[in-house]
Image (cartoon, rainbow, N blue to C red; front, side, top):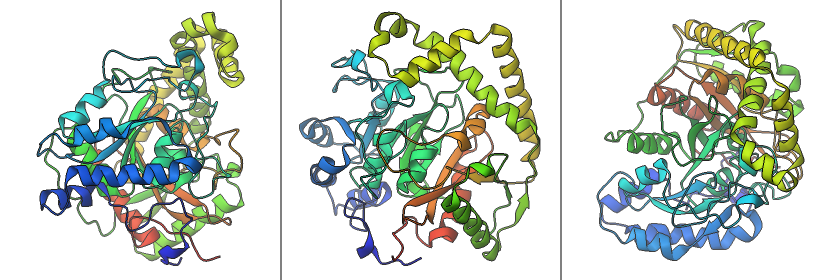
Length: 441
């Protein structure tokens, strides 16, 4: 893989786009003001938004006013994007649905309050699919604007990939963080289920919805984690040889040719770098867990969106209506059985991860598909999201069309920093740098 950054597509962030950690360091050293850092991001939005269309609501004046407040917190002067499932007082929150067009919450969601308390500067709201499900918005993939960025955190992945913001929040119910991060070539952390409050975030499935965020390096992911956990920030430690389990899982036939080649290349590179790899030999239980995730999501979504379905069925996307109608047919017994399977799966995975630092699995079937009418398949994240473990997308691989393909790491619950350290090492092996560039054609 070449490191010639001149070959990057025109809407993809290059070396001149500061990371969150770089921004923090330059501000602390007096070489950059918070206003300048935010203005640079605003300029990127204004330059690339006409093609990428990542933003649902964007107001530079609001962001610059926030950046002018003196502070010395972890995120001071760092621009952040917010998925439009997150309530905000400063911008409308539409949840990706015409039902809520112009909806103005009277209170910020917990995560907005948390980042602002640390000096973070939200730039606005990023496009989401309808209620975090499949109906896409207008956002295009910065690597190729004829392709989807994935979903449901579509705008979040695209904005980070385009260098509009160094950090962006998303959520995941099936594969809504990991898949778009893989498609757009950025890093993403899906936190442990329940670790962070979802107060002020429109819910789809209370057993599955999970907060996460995207960045252009593992250390940037860690910076935001430290801020949310109100800890001092320390760069991730250097790991020589983390112990990895690996499996393409029972879904291996779903990998397309490019995805299968990237998976094989990733394993080869890691092996050549001396990283211990053990075939995880995952059990048949995985297929049952895959179906359990679908059952739980349908049952809970039907109840979460019951008011909207009753009053606004004609304003809801066909795929979402189909999900909700299916959820109405799921019995309480089927739901309870699926939850029992999930508990069994969590017990199994906890035992399987003993002695290992993480499980390596595919992040997506392959490159981002052509077209903006669909967001791709979340299959490779469904089970891990159901089990609740933290997951990271590690970029650095590419498919036959020079589009990014990531690898997914599944870690131990509540050990996000440890998982990010593993991910940083894997990323170093894959790309020799924390941000991938397009290979020579």
